[in-house]
Image (cartoon, rainbow, N blue to C red):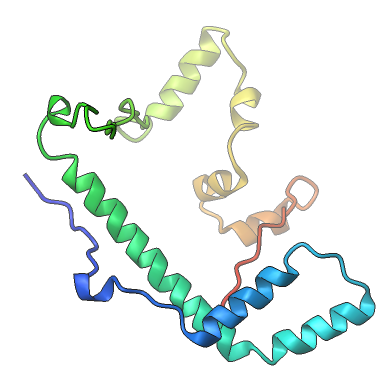
Length: 173
């Protein structure tokens, strides 16, 4: 049986600390979070924030270390309680209840072309129309199925495809 690779953080690296600058940046951001500001306050905020770039970089580096540590802890917990059978889990007598959620599954086609066969059979049985199926196919999947990259696909059908804005990702380096 193949073993899953686990992303481990060595014990000596688990002691993540906040630098003085990172903590200052955190407290600055926390003090201003969700507060409505007039134009003067916005200008002051931006000036102060700009003077804290290094501190925010320290805070961001600390966040990344914490995320790696949290991912490692999660993997270790899953591995630890995946050994043995479900009946081997602690019974909660000490006030701690440990259990796994009900097993869930994702469904995939067994072989290529199964999707087309199933769609044809559904249409033949009158359970749905081809249009019903195709209207549920995401733009990216339709473009991929046609062998056209998504940008070209959008150029070809600007009256049918719109771009919805995703949340931006902040990068601090």
